[in-house]
Length: 230
View 1 (cartoon, rainbow, N blue to C red):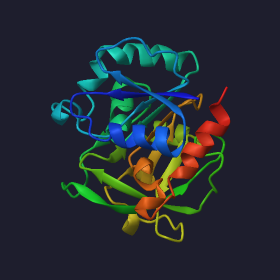
View 2: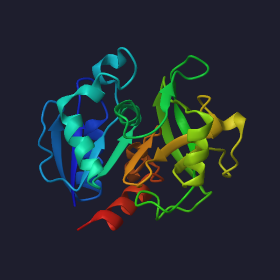
View 3: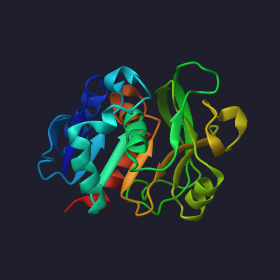
View 4: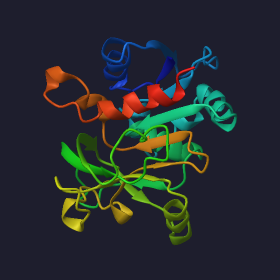
C-alpha cells in the first residue's frame, strides 16, 4: 500500500507519520509538498499534525487553499481515502471535506496529554479492527480542538454512524469530566458520508511504536492497511 504524507509550512508531525508507516507498518510512503498537485498514485493521503502557516486566521484555513488540496478533494470525491490528524483534521473541515469546525478549546489553553477515546463504530476502514466502546489511550496536543456543528449536522453524523471517536475515561465512560476541550458530545473524530475521509484530533501515530510504551494507536493503521491494500 502506498501512502502520501502532505507537508505544509509548519507541519511538525509529518516525519512521525512517515516513520510509523515506513518503519513500523512496513508500507511505501512518499512525502508530498503542499505546492505539488501530483498525488503520485497513492492509495491513501494523510494530512499530519502541526501548525500549518502558523495557525494564522484559523487553524487549517490557509492550508486548505494550498494547491495540493484541490488534488486531495478530487481524490476524495473519486473514493480515495484521506486521513487528517489534529491540524490535518482542521484542514479537512476548512476544506469542506468534513463537516463541522474545530474551535478554540473551552479553557482557552493548549492541551497536551494522554487522553482516552472510545471507538464509536467499526463500520469504516479506519476503525473496523477496533472494539466499539473500548478505551484507547491516545495523546492529544492542540489549542483548537473543540468540535462544533449545528444540531442538524450532529444528528446526521449520529444517524449515519459518522462519529468515529468520543473522549472518555479509561473504562470507556463518556462524560463531561473527560472532555479535554469542550467538543460537542465529546466528539474526537468523524468521517464523511461515504466513509473514505477520516479526521481525528488525537495523535495515533504517537502511540504505535513499542519503544514508546504504548501501541494503542497501531490498530487503526492496521485496520487501514487491511481494508485498503490493493
